[in-house]
Image (cartoon, rainbow, N blue to C red; front, side, top):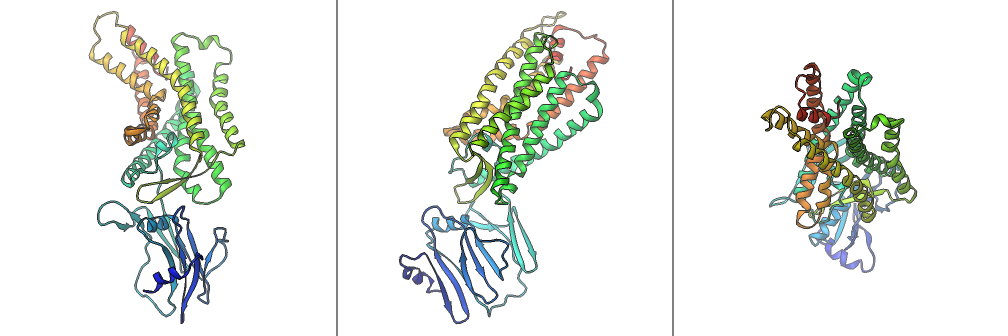
Length: 435
């Protein structure tokens, strides 16, 4: 083993070679200085060892198959390593030892291998390591720079997992409540909101399963996954726009004057993002994206590999939505704040609280929180990742709370038989989407 380093120097212009000493056999290969890739080594029943190319048939049966991921190769080169070797010692038997799959933790001193996020599957003498490194929500709008720290990556991933999981659950509860309780008597505003819930539910679900599909290494499946997630994201933006349009029309009492109003809203809400996604599919802009941290670890997902297309389409699409929704937001907030109750000049505590909840609800309904993607540059890069991830991965959960409280408030107002019909209260109720 002490002579392996000397063997590397003997390779000259060759990149790999077989090595043997009696019954001991193996292979040695140089590590590329740039763009390191994974290394796969097979061991036959006769202990013959050879390096497989990248297109090897994974279904072929080998006595043993060792795969060194590119992350490990990259980390070795970073630490001045120059080669990788796999050696078989046929006479060595290790009893009473358990194999454990681990991932490298670059945090702290000394750095160490940890089992967090890795599952060890042992079956019929074969060991499979499945390590999950789900990416974070902000990647939807801002391509991750290569220098993001591993600790930030883990924290953002954890926040995303919790946020998307909670949003999925509570959006499902809201949809269940609508289908069983309110579907027959739902207003136009509620129907529009439910479509937003559907778009957000499918966005969160597709985001959580994205990496699992990417790890299948089936390019067609990855393209389909990327297109699906992109469609659900653009659909979410579009339904923010539809919420703003409905709110604007409602302020001026226009929906009743528009023929087939809801049909037109549905076509625009689901059809517009389909046009964009179809164009990107036709131009082959979906595929694999690898996100790397400063310690050499990485995560793969199905998305838009071209950063320019990614930002141009997504930031551009949302910018159009934001300009309109923000204008409607300012107009509505101005009405809420400036209109005074008829019976008293100053707003009381309850009306201030109700108006504050209405304003917060508008921020969520109109997707204003996604505007933090505009600040993902320079010194604001990492802070914007955290703010964006917290607000938008939990957005489904926040909207459910607003939906539930507004529904209770709307029910209470109707039971009051109009006894509290002040201008401020009326205005607050009118901005609720459940009337």
